[in-house]
Image 1 (tube, rainbow, N blue to C red):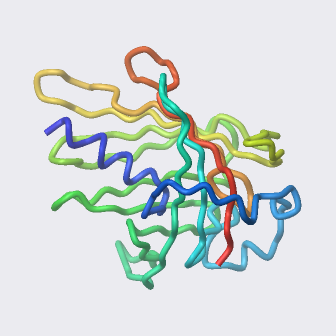
Image 2 (image 1 turned 90 degrees about the vertical axis):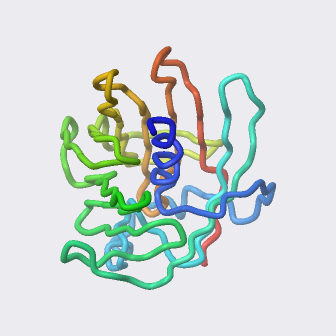
Image 3 (image 1 turned 180 degrees about the vertical axis):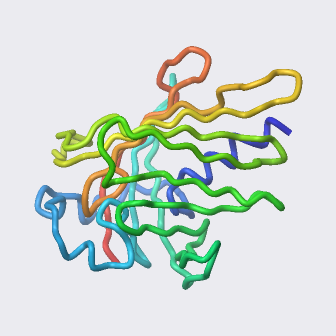
Length: 221
């Protein structure tokens, strides 16, 4: 049962992306110009740090510990909206999300388990901590999130981003006979009007980088 948790976690934290595939396309790279903060983004259904629209395509370079880099494209397909727990969620090809006033919540399903996670609170100050508690593959699971930094400058794949937010995730599973087990240890970096620009996942035993995902380019719908 515990072995089923990490695949579900990985799918959930694709942040509404799906249909990942190898692709070496270099069209429409991210530029400093389209990284500029714009109040127009707030008028969208999605928040400026989570500005994903139907047909958006994001290409990431993934580096794994001791492995070669691969290029993966994540395409977003929006299939409408639905009401969950009294809130309107946008339905994508992988899960559901709601981004309102800087708070981004994802909902995914693993069998009969509904997994709800708040992945970002963009308007909260540095040091803010929150938790999500749910059942994942029948295992009680807790995600502990923390805003580590805001207003950062960060260069990813040669592109300099400003006003970046860093969020850290520590995920724990309450495993029978093992107690509270660390099963996720990751940092996420978000840029305004772009979204997720970088993700670093660490080995839960050694603390060494296990996966390094960097945004290569975006294609607007």
